[in-house]
Length: 509
Image (tube, rainbow, N blue to C red; front, side, top):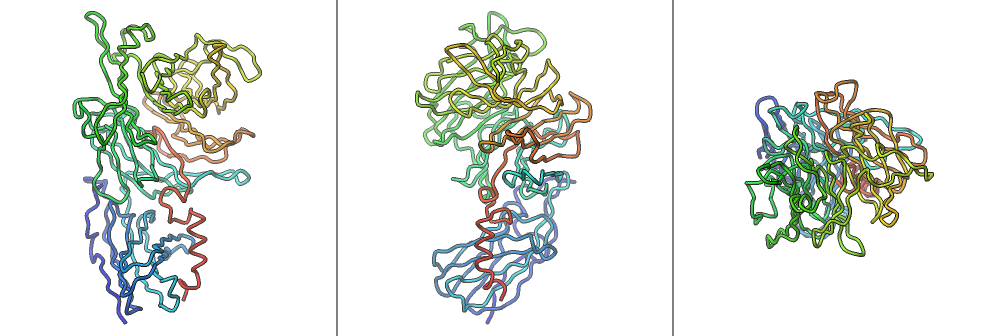
């Protein structure tokens, strides 16, 4: 009876992609050990792209399915589970949400061969990059928290400064870091980043940088990819604030673009949708077109970036796709035909604003320098309204009536704070909404912090709040994920924990 064990004896054998310089080290000296318990099951511990990701490569003498459970030696509630059920001679059991600097005892069993003894190895994950902050999480015990993982683009230096070193960070339900990704140097914090379960990858874009085209980061690969390498101007464009992969696999990119009138030139925007396989540009919309048509204002002194396009949202409708574009400095939202690029409507304070009870509101109640927009149906928008002139930031649900030329605010929430830049809003389910309050201390000094607030709509109460303790950092946007969606084998996936418990008698032998 013997066990083939392969692990590192000093440092991690495979250098992670995200090895920073100087004080941002994300590796640590670890020693992984194992014990020989069977004659027909062999395990190799394989490093992942970062050191909170490990694979147990299992080799069998006869084809069978395998399951693995890893339990932290200092916390029996910290469990990870993975299973490869189809009979085979070799299996990879991936454990992608290990806590940093934690030792786990991992056991592998053959569910269909319960007579086979448990095979055990021990492994220790590496430390997280020192500069990445853990979060403080508070939860209303009556309402509970929706989802388990919160991901967003994070920057250590307020107002981006000269550093502009952005990270994507994933915090769990109690604020511990489970995953991270360092973005290319000089990419700013103003990026969009979304996890796509169908390709098991995080897709991001933006950052006011030529290095910010839509980029695909497979969780288990050390090499990111830009699926649209045939982009006609790749490397010569400033990508900023947003970039996404749509459901059909096409890429949506927000770019800086010049607008001219006579001898005057200023910065506008360009939106392109691309087929990543062929490189075909499926949509090309330039702000010059809307300026020439009279839908955008002329350049004014004080800001070269005249319109500050900062968020996109694509929605498929029965009448074709709609593209929603947030223009902060215009204090307007454009709705564009996603097939033709024609303007469908411009939403601004010239529309009649109504409160939920039908009361007419003053034009000043229209969103001001909004940063987050999300269409929940063809005529309803969730908006993160920064309230730049009112000095109050709030979350809103706006109902659009094109025939009556009215915008009805059917719901809004605020705690009275004011954050003039950044921010985000997302629907979690029918009764919960996630609001990211971005704090930029150098722009709005005060007591504000970067908070991700989950609002219970029926009661208006805060169901959960994730807070980053240093007000000089920036969290620009965030997304909330279910524990069975992102890193599905952790303690936060009920299905995985139920299966682990079902096999408990095998694991505990």
